[in-house]
Length: 365
Image 1 (cartoon, rainbow, N blue to C red):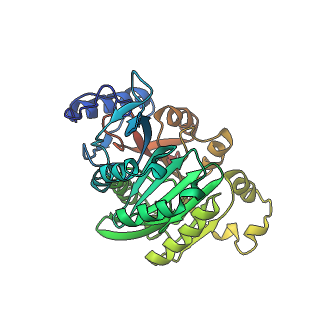
Image 2 (image 1 turned 120 degrees about the vertical axis):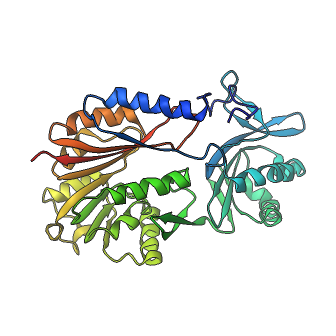
């Protein structure tokens, strides 16, 4: 990506090395960090160097009568940009058209300060952020959505307008099989689609002697649904009402019939396994599950001490991590009872120091 004109001054892509050197850098970093607890092979899955991001956010910066996309700069707060080579081609093609529409309408341009894009195989959604009452420009926003042929959401403090659909439809190809998903604009999604497909495929390939699966923080079912075809039964928890709603739809779309979703946080889930009764569990008997594997995909802060203690009860742990430092902290504790048997790195974000990892652990006999 040496040909991006903003490299070095944009705060987003900070690893300015040829791609093969980026791979070496990341592998070395992980080997050094985890070398004491894992001496096996660190598998590495790369990414396209451009066009890989299906979700992207930009500032909108006003200068005199003009309007520019911005990113956080390394030397300045608002770096004006006129291209971003990381984004999916659908987003890249739409960006200049959207900017022109905003520039050519005083009403649409007034106090707009941000734009977010989400692109899937079938859809594209634009979210515009305003420091003004968006109800005053409802007609202009409707026309904008129609002129560009996109789903559009406008937000300002306490207000939200939706033009078209807020739900996006995606399909992933996992080991030769297509999986269909629907999710809402606010859902947590893996921003690099092809790497996401590789992650799910790798987990499926490395599951040994499956019985039942427990998944914590399941979202709209990104991992849950493909994995359900490998297990006898799946129990998955998630706190978000919308995520559960979409997860249930995604089960229908894919004919996944063996998943029970619990709308509860991890603390309640752990209490339930310790015998505390909950109304939400009145139709589910936890003793019916013979859990051979547990999958966790926590936020950057990693797992709490309580969750670490809880997952150590299970023979096989699949840990999906977006932060090597909190992963290391958690593994130092988990490795007192479990051994790392597989470790893979997934390059979700080329040209950055970010590394996504998946670790499979097995309980010592």
